[in-house]
Image (tube, rainbow, N blue to C red; front, side, top):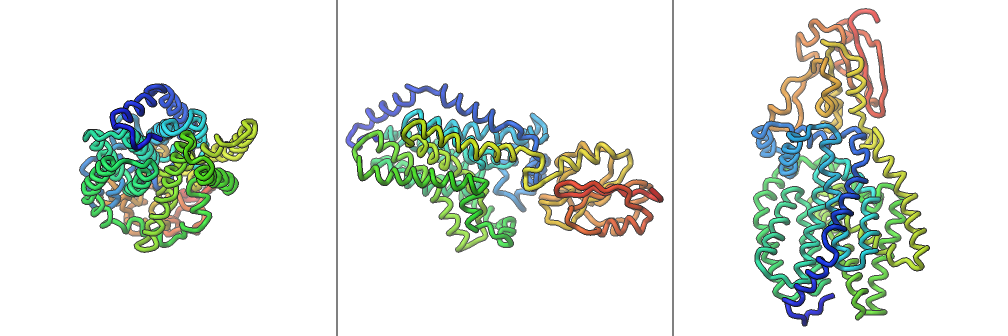
Length: 506
């Protein structure tokens, strides 16, 4: 750790030499490797409700997107706008819309490598990077059309920037403006990343930042906060969109300590042993060898990562208790890099080296099967809309009608299969549609049941019904039977059931 008695110019030179000596080639290579591994199979899992909100919002005309943002989901508008541009260039297939997240995972992992290398040796940096790639939350983010991976990448590099500014004693205004701008962009991309300010305050304490650096950071953070106030006010006015959290229990121990970052209980137990071990080493080494520079820097890295992992979670849980509902585990994806750093630090401390190899092998045995399971067709909470579209597309005929079960919450409605995978419904007519989502200021289509749409069945000989597997006969099915349709085919999927009704006898 740089002594506070060194001159600012010599401290800056030392920090620059440290970065330049290793260059950008290795972090870039690590990031590309992480993106490549994370991108394997991202198009396989069927998209689910949250991704439907992203894709449908991004496919709106610009004026429709702004109208929707004024009414709902303003917190995601920057991401939707970026995704709109991406879809214009690369299309809206599952692989295409998830690719930015896989690339962002690569950017985040390259930042993890850089941060670890700034404060410790290359071995720890490589191990932490691998730990991030293996971490289930990273795998989930890479195959998710949401802003989580981008937020994690921004938080990682913002932390890299702050550590560099502190260690180099950088006081020039342009670098602190950059810090503030990245913070503002991050908050507009995902509101809860504002919690990183508390982590960075602790980072200044851990690195023993000199008073001038404190002042620069304080001004940059305060001005960034002021710039985010209009956005925060709009978002707070739309808090009803997360009211569904009150009907669930996302704050139980399994959700917080297992599902939030680690996916499965065996992985979580293994990960927490490593994390606690790293923190315990940092505490005990401060007593044993407080002045040893290499240990001091490693302790600083572990302290920063521990704060990054725990402080946002504790603050969000506190806010949820006071003003909730505000918390769900996915919202803290931007802290996942800290878990990888702590796990990497713990493995790098294991002696002898063959024992560290055993620990690494256990990590692979635990995480690789889980990673494979994340790339199966129904990995996204059982969503099967890709299979719905494929089945209907292979068997439908021109002029077929289609109706969708509307008896579930909007993000689970089977009609989202039509919006996310429209190719399977090209030969069908959406009989219940009243107004397309693009023509509203809400997220979803406006629909009515068949009995409220006189003439909807005129001229139809075949009608497909897409329903939830756990639902009984729907109102639309009763209407079809009264109109002389008979059920001739039933196809069950993991979550939905496809029914074919035809006029007359089978």
